[in-house]
Image 1 (cartoon, one colour):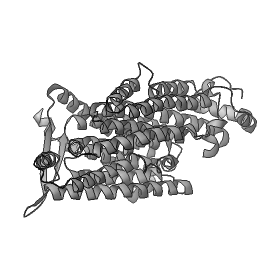
Image 2 (cartoon, helix red, strand yellow; image 1 turned 135 degrees about the horizontal axis):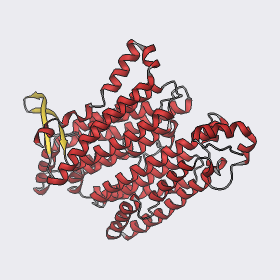
Image 3 (cartoon, helix red, strand yellow; image 1 turned 90 degrees about the vertical axis):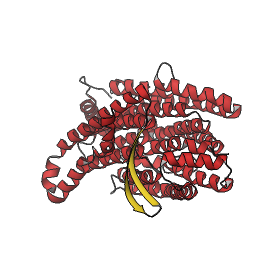
Image 4 (cartoon, one colour; image 1 turned 120 degrees about the vertical axis):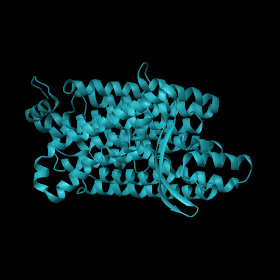
Length: 486
């Protein structure tokens, strides 16, 4: 066991050869690289599968002995200052690694066919693999400086992925909005990291928590300054996980291809903020009022996201605001000190939301067969309806994701959300009432999305738009063998 832990530091770098080879190929042999573009999906999935196997192995070891392993080496040593890099393997790392790799593999397999027609197919897989590398590096980091480096790499990958179709003004504006909004939180995160280093003299989590708790117990720190530093650390998570008031970038992030939306909303960018708060929770617990602030931001976000989702016509924007609301539940749980409930809901929500986003991609492709590329029509739920007969597999999978997100037993999100709701009664009856009401709103807007898309009759607009040609296109895309009559 100890032998395998010694090589745990290579986990983030296993997917890295794919973007490196693609970059070198596009630079040196652009024609050959583009002609052989379909071959890049296989190494992307293979390398990420290897990481998942390693992650599963570490997770099993954590279940058996609940040990924590940290491998550290010095990077810079100057008098009293020492900057170290390393790999931390604990239960949180193992769970997040499995989540990132399993969702990433499903999205990559889906993307091979979804993006097959796109001219940027090769570039897409380079971005996706580098995004997985960055997120794996983030969750295995052993200190705050290392987290900040990979935090910025995750933000850079999200910028590239959201603006993947950068020739479209809407996509270019969306990636810039996400980038600028997250810089606000990232600046706060950097100031918070420097503030806690000034207080404790260490970036390493283990030393940081121990030194800080000793200082607090001996009343050797300024409470106001410590609270300010903790707030700045939390600001980074607020921006990355689209919490109020830095949530404004999230709906515009839907301008990227749908597999990118699935990855960002399930296992990478928005999950990074929840991970950071979970990692630093021993620090926040020792600081008065910070946990109250975290829970307050969470309860505002979950209610605001649900109400905004009610009014959306765009299917991807509706799912985006749903993500915002569910992230609010996770932040509320962390603020209440319900560490396990928050991570449990992070995992169950990730798989459910990935399923819903990938299903929406199938729907959008089907609608584009009728109207061509036109997001205001192909993603508008009001113009859909009656698709259950034409995309039966997508309909079934989307319904399962909807039921899970609504908290219908025995599906996954029921167990995690129920735990958060039950803990909220012990924390604050007012927060509990808001959380329970939002759970009802979640069921309403999710079934609204499902019913507008799949039930009823195919909209008259599309019936008159393209007739038999549209029917044949849907038949080819969706694998329906019988003739369709629109």
